[in-house]
Length: 172
Image (tube, rainbow, N blue to C red; front, side):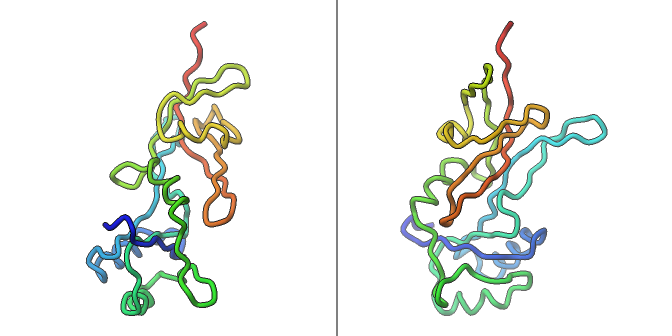
C-alpha cells in the first residue's frame, strides 16, 4: 500500500468488526486496505489464564487507500457499516503523525503484543514490546490482570485503552 495514501475511520456495529472487514475486502478486493487494530490481553477463566485477542477500538475499522467517489458510494452498500468519520460531508483523513504512533506498535497481523515491564516500588520500566516508547503515558498497571491502562491521543481525543503486559518482579 502506498505510504502517501490516506487513512480513514469507519464506525461499525460493535462486535461485527470482522464481518464488516470481510465484506469490505470482498467488495473492494483489498484496495483500499482494511485494518482492525487488535491487542493481546490475559484473561482469567475458571482459575486458568488465557491469552485473548480483542479489538483495540471496538466499533471502529480503519481503511488505507484512495477514497474516491466510486469507493465512497460502495461503502454504503456494506451491511453493518454505520458511518464514515466526516466533517461537513467530507471524509476526515487521519493525520499521518497519529498513524505513525500506532504503526510501530502493530505486528504483521495488526495486533499489539504484550510488553515486558519491570516494577520497583512505584516506578515502572518497560523492557520490551510496543509500550517501550509510551512510558510517560501509562496511567495504571493492574498486576492481578496483567494489564496496563494507557492514555493515547488519537483522532483529536485522549483515549484510554488496556493493553496486556508481563510484569517482571525484581529478584529478592
